[in-house]
Picture 1 (spheres, rainbow, N blue to C red):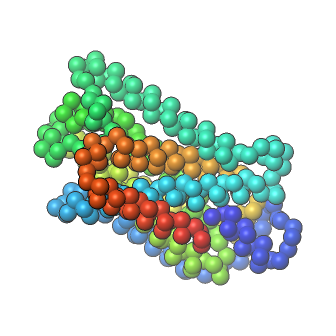
Picture 2 (cartoon, rainbow, N blue to C red):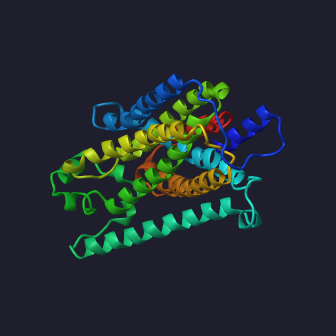
Picture 3 (cartoon, rainbow, N blue to C red):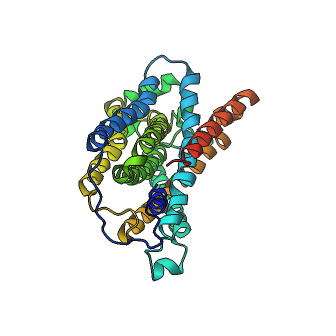
Length: 340
């Protein structure tokens, strides 16, 4: 996102030199920019909360499955096309010097982020197992990778347990809820960083590109929200904690509008090409890319397809349908990278 704004600014100015400090920007199309804050908020809320609401209503399972598989593709494409690529370009800016020029920081930060997420999840998983073991509960690892495999009756029984038991019990659901909740938390963390960056980028973009970029961001936030909402809806929580998926969905939906408002506040002097902006955007994009890559391949694809007993028993047609949904989500998000 930042890299594309930088390229467009260079084309518009026709100058070879890059301004690495503050610049002055005209206050143009402010009514549209302010209105865009609310437009993005509404569309983000709709995309994120829709899977959560559908999960709690009598809708065909195929509808929810489509949202879940489609969202998995969206998350992975976001990591590659909307985060990792811009991180390479931002941290390769001509405004940077010294150590920033001596090493390829984008892949290094993404790799560090992947390993950090692995260590955090591994530690939490082992801590959760030890907590259960002290209470005489044994986790069923054969079914531990897919929280949705527990039948509705089992989930209903767990919902009646106290919060500390229902949210961590694996005896009946076959799902280590600690690892499941942590996996979704990692996913949310990644998309929150990304949402902050694109919020500022949209607010400070040039007027002649603003309308096009706004439309792209609307689709982007909606698709990403569907992916996040589908995973939030599967959290194995006690009935008293049913509000948590909605709160997490609203948090994601609010981040981009909030940072759009911040971007409007600093727009008059903000320079997406500046040294500070390039470093901040590049580092956040690289870290977010690592988070979403780990989540996408480990939490979403591997556990959904390789370790899921449900998917192992599924027909070839169902597996092919799921793969097509993933590729559709990834393809659409990759296409959006053409403009944003």
